[in-house]
Image 1: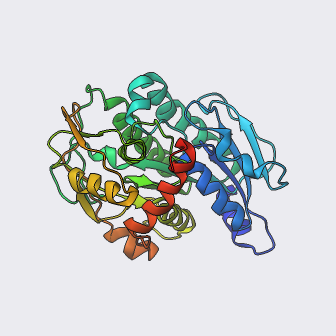
Image 2 (image 1 turned 90 degrees about the vertical axis):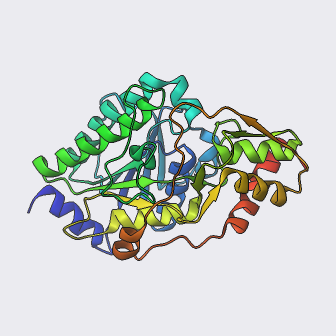
Length: 332
């Protein structure tokens, strides 16, 4: 029996407590995954250098015997004692304001960090999941975007550091799966929102909500006709969990996880304004270079393989997200 077969058999044993490692587990998405794993009986170790994450996101877990946190850069050598059944690689700057300010660190975590995480999975006989992104599709020429689409990415543009780091990470993950037989999973995450997003992280949801709550103009780039689709964080994390637990011959191939309900940016700004009760005006600014004009996932594969689709409505998701931002911005 190989180490990977042994790890999988242990993970399925109801008497075995699964052990998960989450890189980037103090971030927005990673911390929500940690909560889900703990609720489902996992012992969880978080590795995060806090370059974009925050211990505030995991402070409520302090003192738990089934949770541990290590502050470390995942691009450095990873050594851990004990068993690891699942390795969830969430580490990476993920908002434009972050990866535009940290282009080299973004490239390093996608390449060196993924290499180190895969090496740890190989050593421990763990199942490995890479959080990739819809940005691998670039400014798409195919709409909606299926996993079979290879993308339209500007490798030397300002967004290339993030897009290419994730494309390389996918290639490296597939290489480890083919050469070393590691059971790998790749999720391509589309726009996600919810509590624990940073107020000033530069993405459209926190930007619109914080501006609306403060009565400031809502900054809309371009003419507002570009589209996005927004998935609530609990839906996304459930989909990712199902992908990691999926068995089958095609489980190693990428899966889109996101909400296929598509809105123009103008429509989304109006949704935020209505939900917050704000009178903020819309201020138009030039469209950033290489900003995608369309973004909507084809989730046929997730529906078929994972029996998954988003359940939280935009109205319900915005309600809890706005409540979180009201508390953070002291706007009532």
